[in-house]
Image (cartoon, rainbow, N blue to C red; front, side):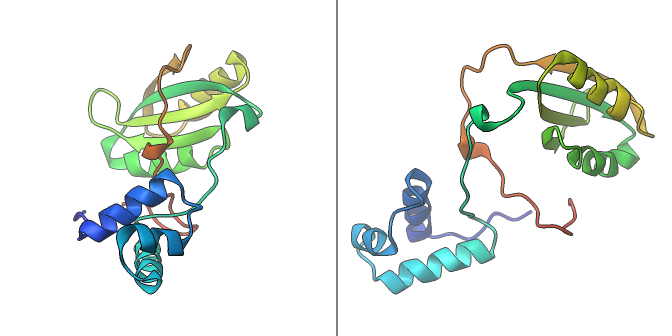
Length: 161
């Protein structure tokens, strides 16, 4: 994947929106010394290229389940993407990454009790064809969580590359 070709104005615009996405185009234009149409056009292009998206980030307190669990999955390399996609469709799973190392898939989930996490890891994921081993870890205290690492999710029908 090639890095997008962004100029200094794009970076400044993204920096402002990352701090407060509710700021008006007029205010951004004034702060950056450009006209409002330029700001509007740049934002539209960045959205169309899926480099930025506007959404409300909710806190864990709004979730029904607030415990964070991690499920490391060792799966057939030839099926890792397919298995990751299937795991991503499970309701408790909030993020799935294909990784390097002894485990090739990492899933992050929210759960309400240990039995729920156990059923997900051992009853659903471990029983999937091509999955050899799973290990779970529990978050006991969150020292830092940055919502700036949230990735723009795929649109329905998009494929994982």
